[in-house]
Length: 430
Ligand code: UDP
Image (cartoon, rainbow, N blue to C red):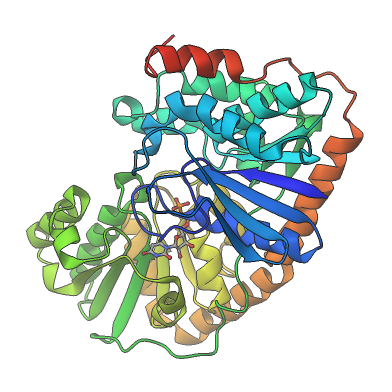
């Protein structure tokens, strides 16, 4: 099969840990690679955000990344990218020429607009392409949790629902997302589930572990944005101290790659100030961005990996921790409800509850044998369910369903009208 992936802000070639570079980058990179290994020809289209990037980068025998000129050739926050989706669609269409793919797979809602636009115009020219969409995150959920702090374009929720209703198939990454999609008006019979996966050759239980600076260590990994709840883990550290566990260090991974970058990062500063105020500054290390290859040794050094987001569309970090055989303490939200099994591979805690996090860490520390069992079970679970080859096979099934249901009616919206209108208004509300 010939497959085009569209990932407007999340390049599979980008460094991870920045504000807009995380799970989606990993997902697009790994899924594309796994599909190419299954014999498909995969091209990933992403926005050119640096003038020195080559037009095309071949990353495997059947896999390439194309940098499309769409908007300025520099980093633009993803919430500012909507006006350039028409240009992205033009670039994709031009690259397809007279040989479009069978499937164009949009990642994130804005890529969905570009995918629908390109596919719509290809169809008009007599060359049909089916659109499959993975949202990775939903505007409705973001708005619910972030309220006035949500910097998404004003039309996101409206356009996202249109993308969901117009794509031939929508792939949800977890059960919770299926409910959200239905409430957006996406018909259940057009939704498939294919979660994110984990690189099981990299994230293994056996291998080097980083040295610790204290008897116990907990690790939290994520982009340094408030909704990842790193502050809640710092608060939990204080709670732990109050119940007699003062020999625990917390390593927070993510954010800028240099100490100067961290010094200038507002979220890093907020976390440092909080740690100082709570009297745990000497137990907290803000590590900043960590390269992929170094992540397993870091995860293996932890008694537990704590994931405390307010909400989480999927969350790849818990899978990576489980791959390394480390128990996961996770807020029971979004994808974490599917991936972490309470009492078997880790512990679920209510969202935004530092005391519950502290209690869960204390339980893990109090019973190392039980904790090792959680780690072993977690490793078994990811090996059984979350290899990228399995996720690619599930995705391929969704593609086949999309191709088979090609004649069934879906809402006619090709992404173009709205994208064009927004271009002319500079992305402001309709
Ligand atoms: N990550 C990384 N280095 C960092 C921070 C994060 O490699 O400094 C990786 C992390 O290991 C995971 C991804 O970025 O693979 C984050 O994905 P997740 O789904 O957990 O969160 P998202 O960023 O999508 O909200």
